[in-house]
Length: 396
Image (cartoon, rainbow, N blue to C red):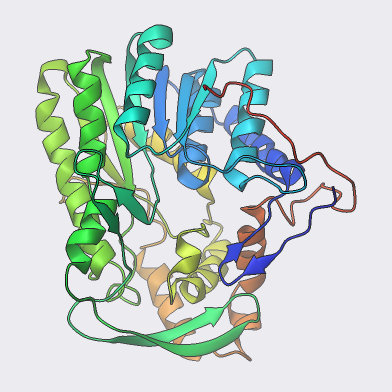
């Protein structure tokens, strides 16, 4: 079928298998040129199909020849209807990994559930024995608690008062003011239940109790802090409370792993175009300005560059530097004083008319459509493609 992008708001309803494949191959090529010395060898990636999770799987496999198990929740294709992009990403990764002689298997299902945890544990026991790294990169807006059955839904809201600032509709380029009402009721607790650290710790506790974690085991979850421009709705809002919980959980995990010299870390990463970030008001405008500044300075990174630097310069470097809160910071280039000062000045000038010149809205839009396999260099979108792509190592 011929597949074209169909969008609704910040969501693209279609995805392109060949474009997704090319994206994956580009990331693989990047890591082949930047291998990871003394990197992990047996890796579980929870949330492995897009963004930082996918980049982590690629970096593990092609940076240090690691065997990888990926867990994700993606929609398979049906006749005449494309799969979700994460499905095609995972298919492309596994096809290439198997071709290159790398172990790669995947489990598709709700990572919050006890059933998927048990299935993953059995696969580790049967195939890998012990693992030395778990990447936790889930980005679900809802969670059903595996023990109580209670369903929680996260919200993106400020705490205490209404938040008002500018944002941009990245499809039209229109800059406009937006207001978000403050959270109420159980919004904070629900958001923590979905996006905090409880599920991450459940995974690690299960794997440790089953004795499948090796000596010097590491686990990393991903977080974001961001600038003063976005803190009222992000870091000081409901999601910020969840991130605080996630970061506190890292210390609990480290305490629980002392007998195997294991460590739990949170890595604070830079702002990037993801399916999740596209839904956050203000963030698209901020990213379009940030991209412009960082590209001019020659320090712009995408997901794969971020994760390669995390592995090479932080996790597997001789001296791991942490901030005062014990976090790994690979948002350090984004948060440089000179970068933030330039973004803040541009923010004051940003209008529908000025943004095409002072921002990188084209870069934002390209990255957005790339997430779904569109606008990828070298792909012929007029060509008929087979939407029925299988994931070679998918476990039933």
